Image 1 (cartoon, rainbow, N blue to C red):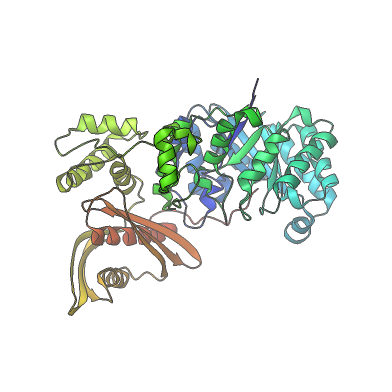
Image 2: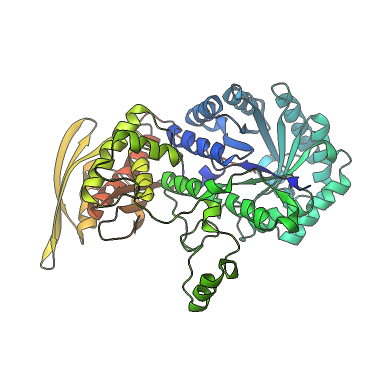
Length: 516
């Protein structure tokens, strides 16, 4: 009988540490609900001690999301563990995940602790967490660059202290698959009480090996994999959840292991996370990229027509990918609209239904066909937004081959109407220069990207921007059938996040995070 591999999804914790990918509480709850639909085993909902906003986000998920275990991260400190427990105490099943570095470079330069001090602190943290819950996970941060004998001493000690899961992180993405697999085998052979805990792995993708390392660990007996939707996360990201799940599914005979994840929900989860974070999935990304099931070669197309198995090892339907199809039109009513959103995995409040239905009707009046991707963009724009300090009221742009582009903009700022006129090198540049002058925001635009969500000249266009202020990156996105208006919406969305993070919108600044 196949082994069951637990999927520990850390999209809401490690994934959110990706620059610019911070989510508000409503967004976090929506992602958590989608992860529950996916049927992941554990959701790491956040790092409660990091900020009041993070604490409340984890608490909300613990109260609202049923099914998966809800985990909270904590350093090996009592105040962190207290915060973690207070955030998850109302979950159906809660887990405290505590960590402490064990590599020489981390102990000497970051922690300024001796090996014995680290060992004692790790044991004390697990014992303290055990006062709250039986489900305690411990991670020796930077395990792959640790002395293996010392690493095994720590693992044995924390299991004796009550840890039920020990996670082996490749924190800086340093390991290669053969080496990482050998480390898991070494731990299994060297730690005498390892049978009393689940071995987990948490691999980063700095060398592009996170998924391969995770699979090597599974082959050597790991029973849990920590990963994220679309592989998002700090630096180059984490092991990709969809790659782990589908590899075990497609190569089940090789690994003799499987997960409980519902693969047909993968595409929906990918689109939801991409839409909320503003992190666009690269076209050639495995499983969820737009080219993942595209075939241009004549030889490939000929083979597919004869038998799809010639060039497809899995079907688009197996990951929930369907062809574009008209789902609603301008004559569709609220009942059909609500039913379609529920079918797509969205669970919205009445006021959110009102806002999205109003926007849907506007889009439906402009387009002959409204697709699922259009609805996803509408939900992302109208629901997953922080309070807006800057609100676009009107926009007019003059541009042509013989004149300098000029933008006339009306913004509502803190409830007051402001109007300004400005020029630029192009229509978008004119809009952005004018908005920047009106909002008096200091920073710089790092990236501007446009894509058509569906085909045709009447497609809903989506604009994504990256805006940097004080070395922090903010993503903004906007959608409209008019790409100029979408550009203004995206820019204002980013600037609203800047204002929100500074406290102008009521949010506390997040303290720098660390973790496995």
